[in-house]
Figure (cartoon, rainbow, N blue to C red):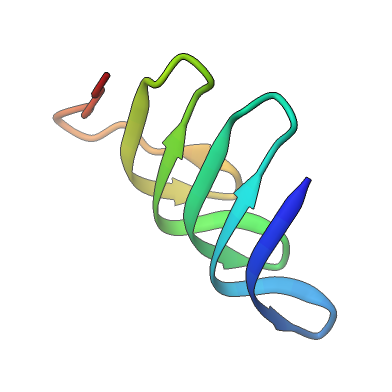
Length: 68
């Protein structure tokens, strides 16, 4: 995995981008090495979720934005 972004206390904290060898990409807020806050997750097939994350999980709101 490739991480580009802020570190604090030897952990991903703040804004950053994490690229997985599978082709998945997360861009957004990190707290203690977890997706936490606003972010965009892109799957290898090009589908995208944009919205809030809490402890590595996306939080479904009234609308889910899936783009391709």
